[in-house]
Image 1: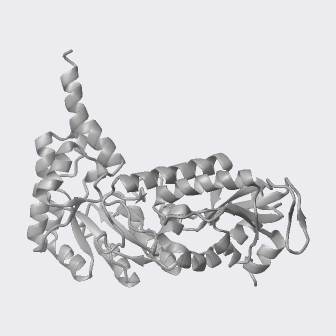
Image 2: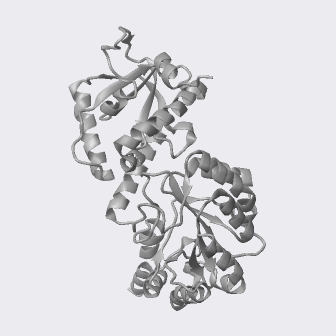
Image 3: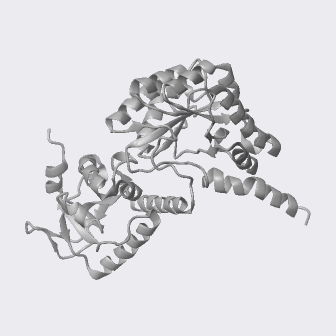
Length: 400
């Protein structure tokens, strides 16, 4: 039929690259390892002498490094800003020659834009250009082929600031990023254009707060564990999405509302019978509880030793949630059903065997998660880890 050839061409040129590259980010750099408290702030659309210097000032004052995806014409018009950016240890990468969405460009125009942007920026910097991010992060087959011909790697993001959104204030932008950013994040902001109106006044406060949380700020090339998205990364993201769905259905929330906390917590009626704590207290089935779950990708990347240290800190946030969240206000016990009982026992939790049916079910699920997240082989037997509310708050609650 006459429509089949145009449809096939559209699929190959636009639909498949959009799905595979733009949305799934296959072959792109999207995030780093979550094993260390470091992230990459990236800035698009500059340089602009009216706003970029303020961004550079904030980064300098915080001792932070970043990556700037610049427009070729603006780089040529303001070489002094490019020189300052490089001199202060930042990374300069290509954004575009013309800031147009890839879907509305001709194939030849989209292909050439990447090559010309890389060539023109290289002439300004005097050094090879390693990375490219197309406007809006949008891809067609021409964009993919253009990046390959130019010898650059595409860079996407794992956290979008949305500083360009007209309704987002600087305070709202800061709060959005503090909730979503975590170890290994690549964050996209703007040092020019509409987004700069929120980013410039917000940035110093964001940097201060993230430094208090122990973050270091890296360039994309300096961020640990940045590798192109492949099948293993897609499998991992799929299970992160499964965890998110599980949380939505179970009304489980990231502790303190933060993506970088090691735990997620929700209300639960105690599911077991016949459990008696070490002090002789019987835990009745159906007792109101706070059940916590692990932030799986974060723990896998951190490893058990670092996870134990971080858990001592993050359990304090769990304690604050138990004291302040309405859904957890009546919780009498805090528990977890998992294969992490050896770790949790070092953190003060009592450990108890589970009924065989619970053990088999949790072992199967733990094995699936191990393969999904690439954690080491061998899953310990799942057990119940539990503390009373009083005992948990005595150990992890605020002391003053």
